[in-house]
Amino acid sequence: MALLRHFLGLWEGKAKYDARPILLRSAVTYETAAARLKEVLLRQSRTWRRRCSAT
Image 1 (tube, rainbow, N blue to C red):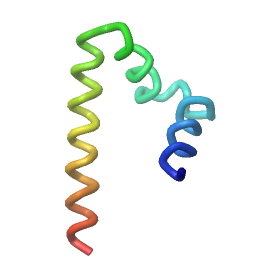
Image 2 (image 1 turned 180 degrees about the vertical axis):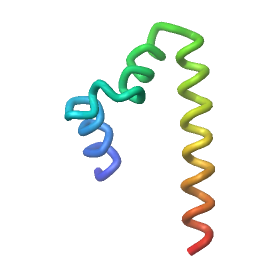
Image 3 (image 1 turned 135 degrees about the vertical axis):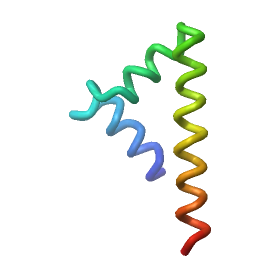
C-alpha cells in the first residue's frame, strides 16, 4: 500500500513534472523511453537491495 501511495504521489503530486513520471508516461508509447525506464528501475532496485542487505 505504501508503494502505491508513493507512486500516486509522484504521479499526481508536486513531483509530476519530475523526470520519473514524464519517463513513465512516455514509456507507455515510446520504445526508447520504455528501455530507459527499465534501466532506471533496475539501477534503483539494485541500490535498494544493497542498502537492505547492508543492515
